[in-house]
Length: 68
Image (cartoon, rainbow, N blue to C red; front, top):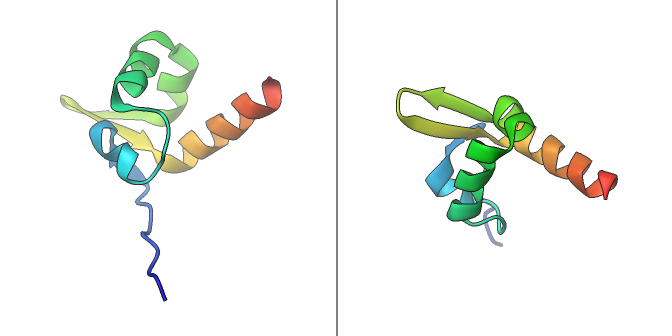
């Protein structure tokens, strides 16, 4: 029986790939700097660290796929 990795609520941008297949770190950085809605809803900044709220990211991702 395989144990599943529990996804933490806040994940550093550079570590999100350990829990999600897509997007790449470079694409995430681009989204944080160029997509204001994504940044406001999914990004938490602590000093220089950029953290992604995984629950908000999942909601945002589902909304994007519905809108296309």
